[in-house]
Length: 293
Image 1 (cartoon, one colour):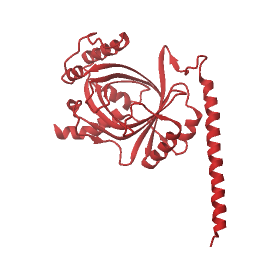
Image 2 (tube, one colour):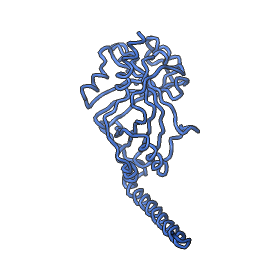
Image 3 (cartoon, helix red, strand yellow):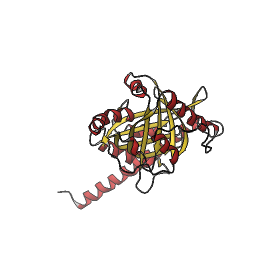
Image 4 (cartoon, helix red, strand yellow):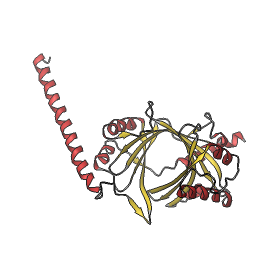
């Protein structure tokens, strides 16, 4: 039997150990932030990777179990802030309408393992209830990505869903760069017969960190739907693409990933993967599409 005095001594000892661990953590965090600050330019702005005037970001993807995801949320919650767009629920739902050409070029680029790929998509953050949607052209070169985007009105997205071409330069809501994105999307629709291919939807918990312009996202409930005509409707039929309890972690950063975050990610053993939500959702929805047809 342990005496009362022995239990008190043990509790004091554990208390000292906890304080020491806390001090080590805070010291390590301060040292790494000082080291990370060396990656800032003379004006205090973050250095970025630019090639030929293009702003590239690094993108790494990892498959996680539910336990790993929970451990990561505990770690990241101490180091990073959640994205300002997250509401009281702590996450938001991302719904993307992906397009492909008459020859399924985006699918074949993934299957052939090409380093340089490109996708067109319209993105919603309110499960189709948005007043303005984000049209994006996502480019990939190995582990580096860059995106171009512009806004589309609800009426314009409705026209796209119904196969109606948009007039060039008639939006008037964006800059010349944004109008260029819209015009190139329309050119692809006309010349490559670009059309809606699949809807990808998932719940996202996003964390941000200023040094390195880091964004770490935890994506759950990834599913795909062939009901592209229901993109702006709240409810649609969707098929999960991962087994229960499996999720996706994405890490995006500019020039460098701060050491303090790299150390936090090493707390759990993660499997890095080449993961395409678009490709998996296309593969998952084909059997359902055949049943519907």
